[in-house]
Length: 346
Image (cartoon, rainbow, N blue to C red; front, side, top):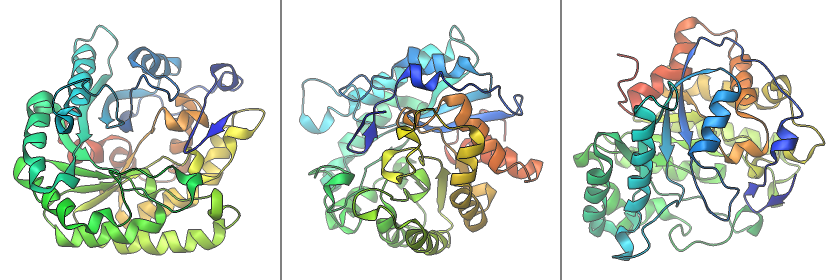
């Protein structure tokens, strides 16, 4: 596999070297986090996602699309170009809702880019996102992942260090609740305390932490897994004390995690993934409880590590000993409640 920056290129021929039938195939799943893009990153469009959904028959009833700087408008005011992504995702959602492409309601919920760094000037951007997404627009994400190590990504003016504490950002963040919007947080494990501070400052705004807080394992963090796990676990426990915060279980297949499965000659089995990732998943569930935890595929970034069928099998293996009620939360009900999707009638 070829790695570059925070992403890794994926090869269908490599993924095809290992196939598994779906475990517990009737269990309803809401994939709480995925992307669709056509960009310099490995291409992953609607037809590619359909291929993954149909390759192994997991019962994925709906998905949540999360911002990835895809399909921005080519012109118009610069701050409003991000609305194009929600327009695009809503179009994909309409295709999924037609039933012509299978049972899965792809993009049933949409999370756009919030431009919260604009402060109060983010108001017309957020209103435009709501207009473009309609009832499917559930929230916004403004990535704050930052680290001085270039192995974790190049500097981005939209995500400087300390973004979540920035006065203008918090002015923009304060606009979310009146519009009924949630906030998706993508940051590194070293920044979890920054999100905890934000959550305590805005206790009425629903927040979800993406990718289990993004544990790190490359660059200056390589070879320090045990030490970093202790730090990450402490930060997760502190964050879980904020009742307005939920967490997504996934994202561990990204390059930044340093697990290295993407560099092997053959893709991993779901058993191998379960053994490697289970300490992180179990810690999150113990801290937050199943009602605030939701599984995510984080495809296509996690596609660098394994196929769609294998990642869901890995999740199912990790919680095989849980109760039926807990599994229902983790695989579908928490995402349905948090994003108000109305897919399960709960």
